[in-house]
Image 1: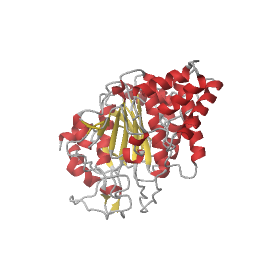
Image 2 (image 1 turned 135 degrees about the horizontal axis):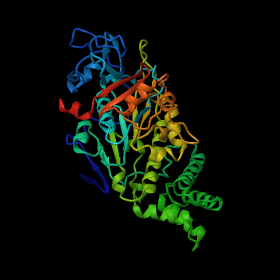
Image 3 (image 1 turned 180 degrees about the vertical axis):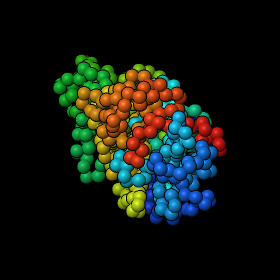
Image 4 (image 1 turned 60 degrees about the horizontal axis):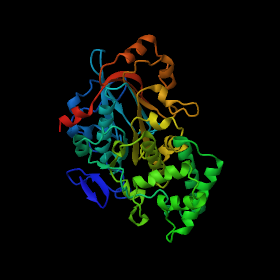
Length: 447
């Protein structure tokens, strides 16, 4: 643990030197295919595949090899995620996110407590981060929201070179519009709308009068500070002048958030999100140590910052023909995603729908498939890859809704009774197969 001012991070023991900055390698030409040492080509993820590799063949030293080529054609990022079970000779299954036949990069991970979701998710992140050579020299970045400190353990941090951010004096400013260019006016109103939306959905009790007060306070704050970069305390001060001694819900909420000092209190100490988001970043939501509302508030603030970062990315051209390959910039992981999906925030939906244009995807993990559909939003539609672990109450209708068509009663029962690490896997070239996913501890155990 080190302190940089009050910005606390846990850094990889190696110093994190393996992480390129957001612009460091993005303009390099695609690398030439690197032939495999083995004389045979790797199997394709189809039912007609030849004998699959053993788990040891996808452990670290070979993992980088098996993502590069199938025969002679570059494959981009492609790695083994598990093997079939209970069907005689095991068959390997692969995730191929670089392939543009996978229209969306988003992934759904479902399963009851203790079924292996976290181990699988860690394994996915681990294999993504080892694939820079197959991604035009760029290591895909990850922004991880961790509710239970599953991703702050030293073995994971050291393996992927992550740094953990504690929610105190984070060097970011929600009201920083320095990247808005000529659209400052619209950006200011966007902050007003976002703040009103967050307070209403998470806390409630925000009426039209309070919404108008908040709008006035935010706009005044932008005009009152010398550099045009107000902080939450500046907005609170302006709001207090408007309401006087008539304390209302927005004032109480803003006051509590300002007292927590989640973000740096001085705008001069803040950095652009692009600089903050380097490599693998874990937001330790559990360290907030208070109520669910504050954790959700912080999460949705980061979603908004991530969306703005995504919108500013260069849209990289596809390369190759068979397969056609995309460039992957970054991924978002929302653990316990039901905590935020239930609020129907438009920013999450936009990340899911628009991310593919920018080489961005999201992993949403939750216990039940029912969590992925609310009265207003169906989050399953842009999730085209699924790992469904044991779900005791799963129904054929729920499986059909995520693209697993014609699932019979026997398959439903098997999903209900799967062992740890077993799951039903679906992606663009795997229509739905039972497999044992490769857990993270097996990957790093072979280092």
